[in-house]
Length: 344
Image (cartoon, rainbow, N blue to C red; front, side, top):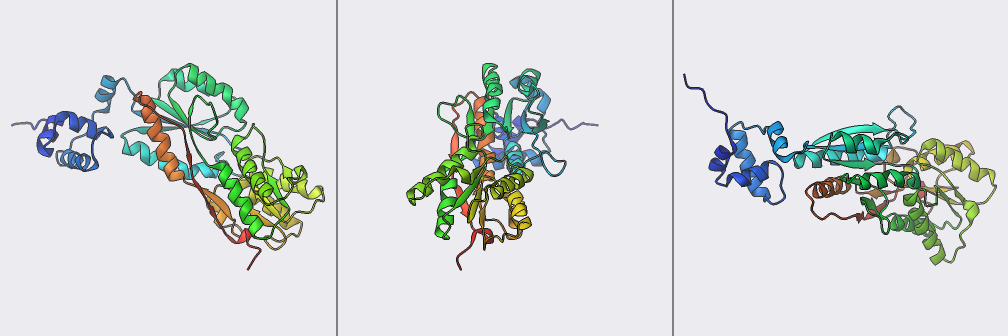
């Protein structure tokens, strides 16, 4: 009885009409292979019931074939401890990893832990994607240690001058500006800002700077009493709005630095009998799924999480292959819903 031998990459090459080296590159998702060739190779592999021996491949490359995604725990209303904005990005990161033939290891980290050493030393993954960080100035020390250990990592967050790490972020300044311009167009003139406007939270600070630039261009003074610090949680937004109301200052609009802050602020406004948008126009930032289901639906700024996830993975793989990688700022778009519409 003859036992059929296991198909090899040479068998695939013969069937697909390409070289064995091309088969190898195609199956590991190399960008050097055209999409048409990759599909032809994959079809031949499927016909031959060929399975990649990841262990053997990894021994040759001395790679784990895995990328690590580190979430930092956020205070949330439920037990997830995940900012809902990152959930949509998680899907695009997972798909991008699969596209390039990598597994994804997801880990939750408490910011106080020595996570930079855990992953750099354990060799669990070839590189790290970082999502979320809280106080950026405290975070910088850990990023510096990752760089010193020559760990390959990328992060989602603010893109700052002279930074040494690779980050993908959105155009927060432009996002803040278009929000303020929209509220001005609705006839609002006393626009409050809820969010930490300091270097501790550089993304919020850029949104604040964009908002301030629009007010200045409109000839309006920037009033410090209309700004209240808040972190990206519903509770923090609720408390920030309560603080603003206790100041007994007139305001006709609120720009919240995140949707979670806006939703918390909406609850506080409702408790005080203030109608949105008739009495106070309200705008958030992020376009989390909940934003379109609150009453009234929330005007907000959309960040392209699909492109963000793909660029995080692509740039990390470039670092792993010792290829050039660079930070990038992605465009944003204002989505207008009922919460900010004061004009018919």
